[in-house]
Length: 138
Image (cartoon, rainbow, N blue to C red; front, side, top):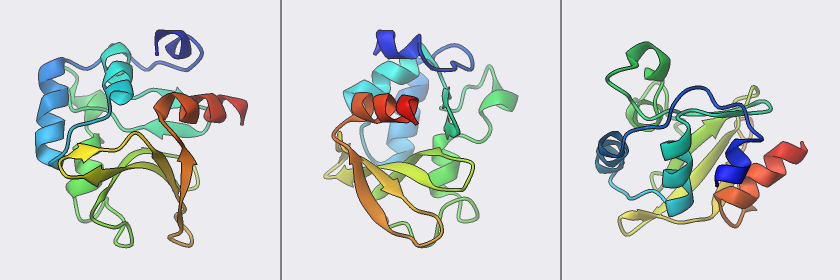
């Protein structure tokens, strides 16, 4: 993951492991290992028109207020059409989202593209590394 982080716009330091675990607990699921690695290197990276939701950081409240738990648990932020077993991790400038799918307390490695306008959901990449590589090509 380190090699990919050098190619993206990192917006600050990585998230603390305790903060990552707190987000996992709030979302009732463990993040995939690649996502944990990305978060540890940089919290809330931007890739082209995509902005990854940060992990809430008590030391950087202003920069992390629009965090992944807020985006998924706040009724005004979460899409009504997004199934309960999907967790949004990023959003583009059109409102589309990239999501993981919850399965028995774990988020699967697959990354899904969730289209804002239609509500359609499709597989985007086998894992986060492949998703980032695809986003870098856009």
